[in-house]
Amino acid sequence: MGGPNLRAVALIAGDKNIRGCLQFTQDTSGTTHVTGKISGLSPGFHGFHIHSFGDTTNGCNSTGPHFNPLNRVHGPPDEEERHAGDLGNIFAGSDGVAEISIKDKQIPLSGQYSILGRAVVVYGDPDDLGRGGHKLSKSTGNAGARVGCGIIGLQAAVDPKL
Image (cartoon, rainbow, N blue to C red):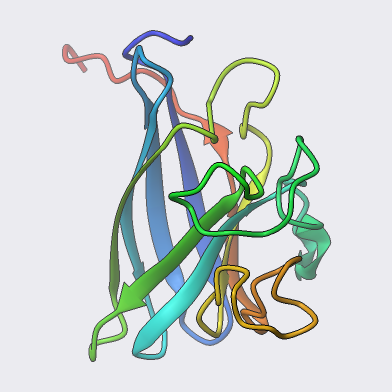
């Protein structure tokens, strides 16, 4: 696994005034902690996923499907049977701001299934976590349109002397 300084960042941009910055930090046990803030969202829950490609040439639509290296069905983040990129929902308050703090073992910054160079995507609607009975529940969580995204890139180590 990576050392304690393995870090990544994603700058989120999207529809209207959706903007944000997310930090990804992998600890020595392999757990990745995602923290940050996204503003400009409609109040309520929004699907939140890692997608296969770090390609935003056609906006968030060119990021491809959910990151799913083990070919599983869509599911909630607290279950083993899910896409690696299924991170559930984030919640935006009445001010349109979502504060994010997620810990997950299926989104490493190193190794065979690294998320570096992939994209994080925010959806317009809640993710039904594969349980909604809709034809898209087991593939996307039926979370609606992609409203914001950003490429996950390696972040330089911060030198305390700078």
